[in-house]
Figure 1 (cartoon, rainbow, N blue to C red):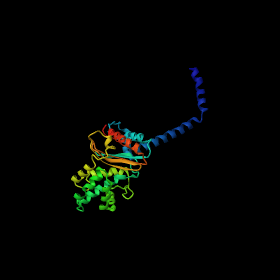
Figure 2: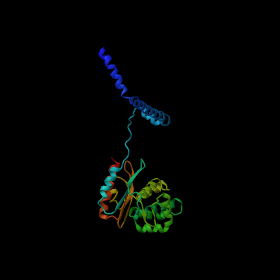
Figure 3: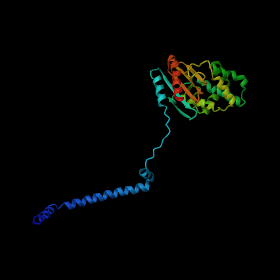
Length: 289
């Protein structure tokens, strides 16, 4: 007991030698109180101003299975690989009929239309016949020649009958904003749009639409898009050929039909003859996987 009696004064003395300790404790108390105030304020703000955030924060995580997102990157990469060492530029558009999804490369870039410009000419002939402005009995052979053989004589006669202004009017009404009859210029996207509108009727009866389809099926030029799909698959299409431009576009009537447009410019014919069916095969496999 005597030992404790002797040490007590020493303890008191040590405490007295730390006069700043109570001041430090007071400052820390203020800091802690301030932080608690800020946290409490933030807590009530989130509850009042951001209930959605607060609900997500306190609610248990819910894991749901979402449907796979459509991504055409794999087939587009294939097309890039097929064309990367070739001369010229290749524009491609694929339009999925069921889902109304469109994807491609250089879709809005201008390309020579070449004989693809015959498409709106054929359509205008039938539209004028629907209006009673001409008799198809007299002009049906012109449409067939333009479709089956891409005949330039039939094309020139049709343009003379219709007039360039009326043909351009058809182009404009279809919404083909990048297509000029005078310049013989178009875009992959515009040609894809043409086939979408044609299949939708194009301002014609079903009978006339089917007749145009028949002129664009089993043509004398079946070595481009048709060569890239399995035998027996119907392809309604139109080729375009001029110096440096070798193209094809149409509707592939597979189990899930799709529009395919392949245009080229500044290209080499021997390369285009090989790559157009190859691009078609890549798209066919992707669309039917």
